[in-house]
Image (cartoon, rainbow, N blue to C red; front, side, top):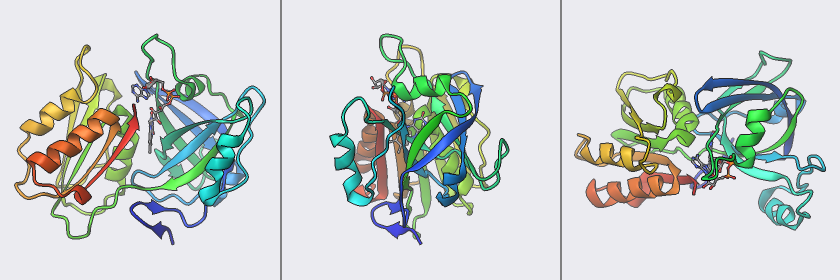
Length: 268
Ligand SMILES: Cc1cc2nc3c(=O)[nH]c(=O)nc-3n(C[C@H](O)[C@H](O)[C@H](O)COP(=O)(O)OP(=O)(O)OC[C@H]3O[C@@H](n4cnc5c(N)ncnc54)[C@H](O)[C@@H]3O)c2cc1C
């Protein structure tokens, strides 16, 4: 049983070491890295927006904290800089109990290769771009944040491309036909993927104009959208400004209670 709090955390967590099995460019800005290895046998897929912390090796190799629970972070920050692994957050795009590239379970991770202002890539994007079979990484399971109340009448999902894996995971895990309104903002229309949608779901792919700030396009569409008059449950993630802007709009203009909006700034 997973532990229930504001978010749903896995019952047991430990640092797992996995290996890259495959890497594939799946769309203009996304690379899919498939990881596997015996340690993943203890990873319990939870569906929806299941996310984990990903740790990348330094030039000295992959060292991971030994403590878990509330103590690992203190140990992590006490590690010398040259051995402290680079940590970033990612989503389980697919989990397969039996791998397609090797024996045992596999996880697909969809990395958005976003550029910094100077045209370079952040460490996680650069790692994914160059990932090769056998490369090691560490993961630490964090569970899910998508937790609608059972009484909700409708659902709203809003995000940018960094939230695409989570939104697709939520849609694929949904087992009912409740009205679900989805807004996804992308920089390139070909980054859209096949979505597992049920009756009752309306999915809008929105392309961001070249000079627009991330989130502007989706917020404009959301403000203009004909949505149910009574508040539902909303989940939003992506750039910090997008997630907080969506929440502000829903609370101040659409009558949502603050507890009815799960929002996460995936990046700043
Ligand atoms: C719970 C959770 C789940 C996530 N799942 C995914 C996922 O499945 N796939 C995915 O691609 N991302 C995901 N993200 C977002 C990802 O963690 C960040 O984008 C992360 O910063 C990327 O690390 P980096 O090393 O490439 O860049 P960083 O070194 O962290 O950032 C470098 C620069 O790029 C900017 N930047 C960072 N992310 C973005 C972005 N998405 N778009 C534009 N500019 C950006 C930063 O502001 C910074 O200036 C998730 C985040 C969270 C919190």
